[in-house]
Image 1 (cartoon, rainbow, N blue to C red):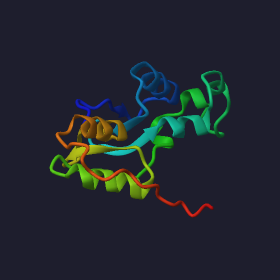
Image 2 (cartoon, one colour; image 1 turned 60 degrees about the vertical axis):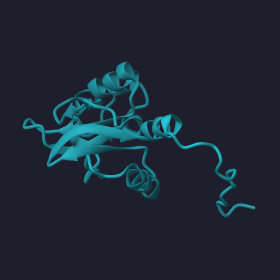
Image 3 (cartoon, helix red, strand yellow; image 1 turned 30 degrees about the horizontal axis):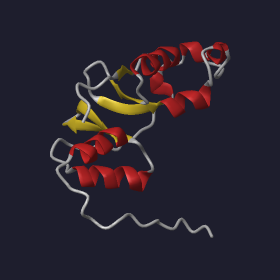
Image 4 (tube, rainbow, N blue to C red; image 1 turned 45 degrees about the horizontal axis):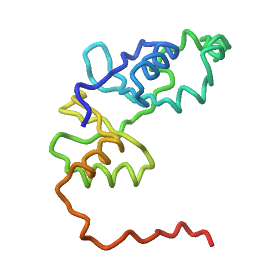
Length: 145
């Protein structure tokens, strides 16, 4: 788990979220309200679907917002899939695989205390005590011939 989490207030604008993701080299931001309660999540992909570059942030988003003024609460995803601190890593990995996502917030009540990502899971695997005496990996069929 990566902690402490990097969070976005629901009032943060799209360009501010893009800048934060870029500066910290992360791909998702749990979105919280003024009380710190989890409301949604915004990913790099969500931002890029609206505006593919900082120059694109000058475009009109709707009759109510220009992209540069668009708060993340207007395009965040909800509900958010989450795990708790006592969720085992295998269950977190299965959740990510099942829902085709690369990370989930770790919550205690409504508060985000961390984020677990595919990178965290890979790091755990590499650092685990498990040896390589297991059978070699076999390819999984994706229905393509």
